[in-house]
Image (cartoon, one colour):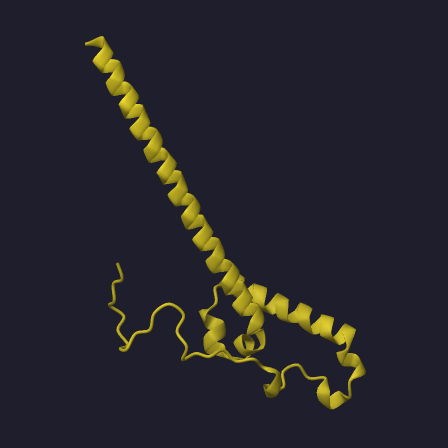
Length: 125
């Protein structure tokens, strides 16, 4: 009786250890996905900064922290460009907000999925 009780305890401990191991692995996977998502989001803000700041709808989609980041990043970029080379260009080429300089994202291109209908009640499992 005592031997079978010890065997049951060992088996339970192995199952708990395996469960804890897989739970920790799942937490690491979720952290990795979130970090990747945030890195890509910041990269896109940096890439399309002039367009985001010129388009109120896009700017308002950013969180407050992302808005602060976008404004600070834009300010740093502008100061850097002016200090490095823009000040030496003719005055008509010194504007960073010229529409020709703004890189616009392709909004008709989908990233993961594309919906054929505009429906807010979609559940993806």
